[in-house]
Image 1: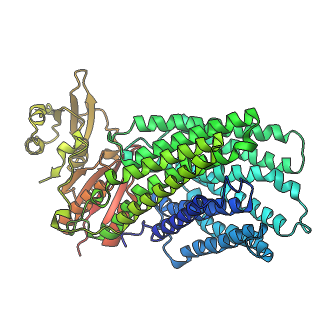
Image 2: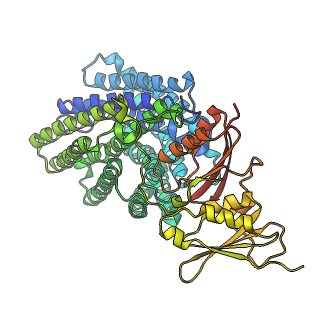
Image 3: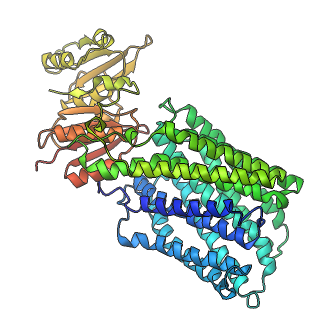
Length: 453
Length: 175
């Protein structure tokens, strides 16, 4: 184990998250979820929670276990206690999925109790995971922009999970909690706070830090970054509170909720402009694969926000929510996540395995552990399949949708294999030992380096 | 008492030829009279040299002339030869003699993608004699490096020079 700043549980989180992603995609490709079962059907909801809790929440919590020590200078939480939330989240998720599947008779009816019980376990264990991370981030002064995004995202995690538990109670005990109207009104709040609050805000924050670090771009985003944060986080907070009030039929809150969502959409646009600035200001001219896939994911985010706005204005969002959620979940969040994993898994694996040897023995280069030319076609297929799937969903072409979903699954399997190859890579021979230090990029200051008398 | 006029050293030709001017600079430093300043002309702002000279008791003042040439005035600390502006670089406020020893080696790892700065730093540290000091400039605070230095028992100090530069001074463990 190198140093005290590396999290030993980040890579296991990534592995568990990938298993959930592949499982969920397999279920979708088998036709057990949207569009065959429509967005609000129990089977679709089960798959959506496999994706949102099992894949994205576990992925982001795993990434934050490493992100927090890197921005706070505190040791990573490497005790066995740090693994308990992961076990709790997986157990709670099993309860939630069983609960959903009991609603349509796939599983026995009594398992509906899994919805509130599993949801509560997810809420408790995500709080266990998020609270120490948030506490460590809260004390960083001055607070950098990525930390502000991540803290806001963690707040929305708890808000989303809390509302989910309430929904679970309504499903399981409709006579005790006769709040069907609350569920109908709150679903939009739950989806918005989860997809845009927890996942998107956190992803924006982590993207700022990771991309600036690997592309050698300026960390200081100036006022544009501040505006992006205030609009997205402030707008989503406004929409969340207005949405809560709307569920209780308080007046004027529908208008406030839409204003909050519009501000958040505008904030995303400002972020995308700022990210374009970051890419242009990078000092590493050649883009690595993770930088390219991140750019495509940002494009997917922009298209999804435009679709949301236009469908909302035209009143067609209820009908076409499925394809837009698909684009947000897979094109934006999962696309960004898989692309960053392609950088982070070899990077962290290299640090864990070879870090203690640095300076003491020859070590391989990280570049030896990956093959971008081999992986790039899988990522290309991944994004093309998602674009095709989104278009098919919007235009109502279920047969072609199936083809796109199958291609999407194939691409994810290909990417997962590439990630596994990076993690399990072994140096073959002496030639794999570390080559002389690369001369790129040319840096005039490096001319002066050398042993001093 | 008269103050000797500054000694001027122009290393631009050496740099343009791809050479290493450090030896010439140190020769000139050795040749300075007590209280005498060194006026250095270079094609770029020689940041690592500031720390080396601070370790030898010199403050610095750097300015870029209209023709693009960098003029750096190194003045002995405590000297009354005060025509140089007070150094405003944090290097002077934080001398590299953080461990009471001038750095044996200086590395500029700015502009290198991760994990190259960490790799080069640890390779350099492990080649140092026990107790010797390495000075490193990096773009961002290397928190993972800190963890590894602690694990290996090397002492270090870190100073933020500006938003795009951290200076780490590392003393190799004597064990």
